[in-house]
Length: 389
Image (cartoon, rainbow, N blue to C red; front, side):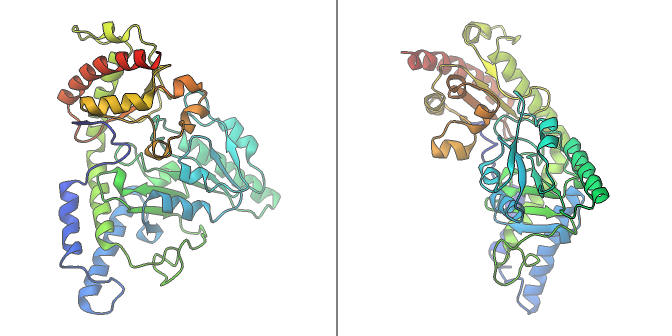
């Protein structure tokens, strides 16, 4: 089987598993206990928090450990009333927008900065825009958004408006693919997810810049600076730290490697491959459309549509043939819904329903990609024909 759904889940790196193992077995102590063994575990837990902070250019007091990106997003967004976000965000973000507004995106999925400026009012407390979209791979102009937020702060200060405004980004899809320095990006809060960068599932964190006030997400024993009570997941935090450090170390080399393979597959699909044995003859007659901004995107994601194709049935057929891909985000597929991301960027129903997302990862090889080309050439034309019967 060829796995091309790394945007949905990544395997746990062997080095990460080894780092976690002692804290799942012999070093199992509650870090809040007072005896020496527990204090040693507490020290390792805080060391992991420090390591995570170091990767993103923060300090450990600014890192809140959570049970994944969804909880981190809820902790950030539910602390504020008037939130601005875009229509292509993760359902966790869209589900937390209360009295706020939705900012337009262009046909490639990039945020409309003019529309963002226009929709900021004196009541706006938070702007939340994902760093990179896991479905179409589009990378947002985070630094430009941060400058807008700074301008709003300066204007409010001058006019005596006391309402603070903050900037949050979900960087779950960006870890190991893009630079994560919070100071350079200009964000006040950042969500990260261990399960997207070869770490354990159900482990995440929220970077919260010093001075930003949040409401507790879970009340109880007061762990995580009183914002997220509950016995700390020591093994998970240590695994997350190890995974994030490895991902950052491999980032530059891996993004080049994956980008080359992704681009090669794209050329094949649109009939511009240099491969002699059947590039164009299979796809030249198929109206393949590449979805999302082709300039500002992650190097490992390729989302394409064939109008009229039953994308869901095609995924099942490809799975049977030996290639695991997706029709969109795992959340949307689980609910059996049409992709809200593809709808937001202007795709009609026929094109959106004919979408396929391939996402490459650390285990992807050139040999696998060559085999994938052959399987796509066999499966997709026949599936399109069946869909049109």
